[in-house]
Image (cartoon, helix red, strand yellow):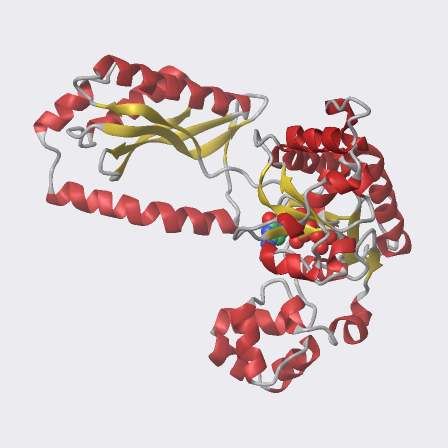
Length: 451
Ligand code: DCP
Ligand code: MG
C-alpha cells in the first residue's frame, strides 16, 4: 500500500496595504489616487470632521454640509502637508504619496518639502482596530490556522486548507484577497512560501494588491539578491555590522555561512550566528502559532484623588472588591482560572509595589479572588496614600467545556516576557521580606480590607 504523497508546507504572510491610510480612504473615497499621509495626531474627539465640514461650507456656501457629506467634501478642502508645522512623523502614506519619497517614520516637515500637496489626516485607532478584527475574521473562516502578528499582518498555514496547494497557494490567496475586499473595502498583499521567513519577504514582492508564490528552489534567484535587511530578524545594528564586513546581500551571507560558519557564531554569538546562517539559506521551521494565550489577566485603576488605607478605608475597600469582580468577570468570559493572585499599589511618590498569593487550585470567582488578593495585600506597606490599585491573576488555566482545567502553555515569547518582568520582582520581594519582616501594623492595615 502506498501512503498519500506528503503535502508541501505552504505558509502565507498577509499584510494590509497602506493600512491606516486605506482605512481613512473608506471614509473619504474622494481621496483615492491622490497622495495622502497619516500622522500628526489622533482623530478621537479632535473635531477633524467638524473643521472639514466648516471648510467645505466656506468654499461652497451654496449648499449645506453635514456628516453624511464627508465622502463628498472636495479634495481641495482637506488640510495638506504644506499647512503643517510641528514635530510629528508620518505613520503611513498611500502609494501615490510614496512616489514622492515619503513614508513611515519620516518627519512631517520633511515630507512637506517632498510632497506639499499631500493630504494630511489623523489616525482613527478605533476604526483601525475594527478593520483589523474584521479582516482576520474573514481569514479564519476559510483558513483557521492563522497567527496574529500585529494590527495589519498575519501568517496563515495553507498546507491543509482545501485548495491551499493549488498553484502553490495562489488560488487561495486570491480568494482571501477578494473576500477581504468585499467585506472591508481594503486591499492586502500575500506571499506564499515554504515557511514564515520566506513568506514574509514574498508578501512585499508585489505590493500593493500583490500575490507572490515562492518555492524553495527559487532561493538563489529571488531571495539571495536582496539586502540582508529584508530578513525579518536582521535590524539596523546587525546590518551595519554585516556591511562593515562587506556583506550586503542575503546571498553573500549564505556564502559566508557556508565557508566560515565559525566566524558568524563568534561575531554574533552561537545562537544568533546559527540563526543567521539558517535564515540566509531560507530555512525556518517555526510553526504558525494560532493562539497566544495571556500570561495574566488584570485590572487596575488610578484614583481621582489619592486614597489612604485608614482614612479612606470604605472607598478603597469598595474599589478593591470591584476590581476583583471585574477580573472575575474577565476570567469567566474568557474561560480562565488562575492560581496566583497579585495586587499592585502605587503610592503618592510613584513607588510601585506588588505582592502575590498563590492558591492550591485555580479560582475564577470574585469572592475567592477577593480573599486571596486580601492575603497578598496583607504583606504590602500601606502607610502612604495610594494613587493606584490593581488586581492581577496569573498561573492561568483554561477551563474546558466539561469543567476540566488545562494549564495554559505560554509561547516562548511570553515565557521570556514573564521571566524578564516577573522574576526580578518576585526575587526582590522575597529578599525584602527576609531582610524586613512585615511589620505588625502593616498587617493590621491590610486587615482593614478583608471581608
Ligand atoms: N505604522 C506605524 N509606524 C510605523 C510603521 C507603521 O504606526 N513606523 C502603522 C501604520 C501602518 C501600519 O502600522 O499603516 C502597518 O504597517 P506596515 O509596515 O504594514 O505599513 P502599511 O500597511 O501602512 O503599508 P504597506 O502597504 O507597506 O504594508
Ligand atoms: Mg501593511
